[in-house]
Image (tube, rainbow, N blue to C red; front, side, top):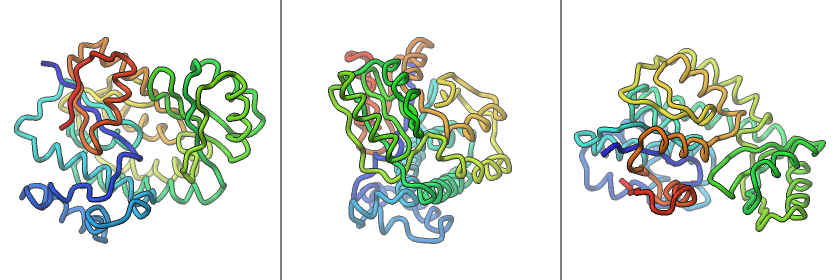
Amino acid sequence: MKKTYVFPGQGAQFPGMGKDMYESSGIAKEYFDKANEILAYNITDIMFDGTEEELKETRITQPAVFLHSVIKVLMAEENFEPFAVAGHSLGELSALVANKALTFEDGLKLVQQRAEAMQKACEIEDSTMAAIVGLEDDVIEKICVGIDDVVVPANYNCPGQLVISGSISGINKAVEQLKEAGAKRALVLAVRGAFHSPLMKPAEDELRAAIESTTFSTPICPVYQNVSAKAETNPTIIKQNLIDQLTAPVRWTQTMLNMIADGTEQFVEVGGSGKVIRGFIKRVDRKFPSEAL
């Protein structure tokens, strides 16, 4: 069966994540301990025993979600034969370690640099995101274009659900207009940053040098990237798409449709609760087979 492995992004964290893996698997313990050394602090303390609030901080969330996903793959490596991989936002880095475009060590270092750069960008200007449910994508896009503040489509999560990103004033204006246009829900999210928007340009500039100086290998299978929603195997293209990802929208709806059209027979969600991306898949095709690793 042609299995495509998909990896969640920020928001998939939960208290206690990875503790059972650490206690039951020598491989997991080895990589969690290695992660503590690379990060120069014990992220395992926060993952295993930290509060929900502590886990929400971007510089903690991103490496925690990455480790939870990637170590699951390393534990199952003998049976890991992917047709393709993809990751939602941060999850794209997990996917690139899973398909061996990146080493574990380089992937974690890039995640740490990405998280810190995004955290700094969030502190430059107050910004946020909002989830819009029940409107066509083109309606949301037109309303965003017509607003005189920074506000853009950020995450095309699934049919009928799109997350917008921008300045506080831009998001507030958009939410009001989108409600008037008939959105079932237009909810400002509890995030302190406009991810996948022009406000992440300082983070993109900072991460560019780190990505360009990191070795990317030809992967063992294609990765469907957020920026293009297409399958890629060329390391040069993969690098550029990863740089562009910070300010470009996550085209996840388009990615899922392309993965199915290209021959995926089953999705396997790796990490987090195992339900986030599978929920999106059900909105594309309720009967399409999926499972959690």
